[in-house]
Image 1 (cartoon, one colour):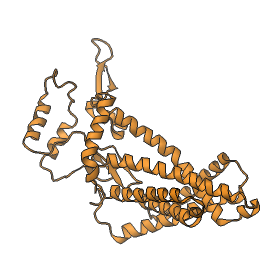
Image 2 (cartoon, helix red, strand yellow):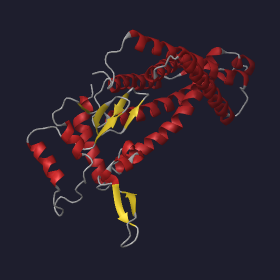
Image 3 (cartoon, one colour):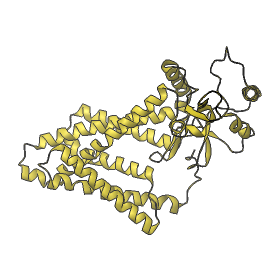
Length: 337
């Protein structure tokens, strides 16, 4: 399956953006080699700051070109080519200084990551087809009040209708949201991920989490291995090391990975939090759009003014929420191809 919201793209809509992404990957990666080349003696923190400034400069240049030429790069292609570039630097530069066992493990990590990346690009996040006969019913029911206690609280008419539709065999998944990027309704919609070129929903959320962990592990491993390479190269004369393009590439790609890991760790922590409290990113940001997350209270008895507060009707406790995610992941993780 192709990513949602896109039919099979024409060459001009696919090849050209990918080529632009390839050019900017080369530009950004080789721009980073300026840091170890001319600021070799600087401390690591200063090198990271300089690397971040260079990447921001390249990004700004890319945005200016986009406005002038009206040609858009492809975010998934940008991730893919960065991935290949770092893998290439490892194979042709760093690998020779790495023990055989570490080499096998790291290449296995990157191979699995590549397979997972391809799968999530082609995965179905939980598409609810527009032609579904129950789509209107679904969209009419997803914003109804969620039953907090099935044994004590009587079902509302909307929940009775929801149950009736389910008994009749219609697909009536709860928490169906609309993605404006893909122009599609997604079951369990969390967010649209530009880097993966797809929505993250009920059917590929587990794969998304596995990939996020995989990227962090692979980049952290690369930092360790490239550091080993640079350390072994320290026995050379410092002047020779500074002017060595291979060593500069090893150091610059290490700095690139070091800049990626922190925000990815923060992103991972956020998604673990969302799983523990059974809430989606879209629901957290746009909770005032969904009535089931709104608790309306009167400010004062007899007053006409009301106050709307956030509540999470899907939160059943951390253990139950995690079990619910794992149960859904077990049935869907291998169905994302």
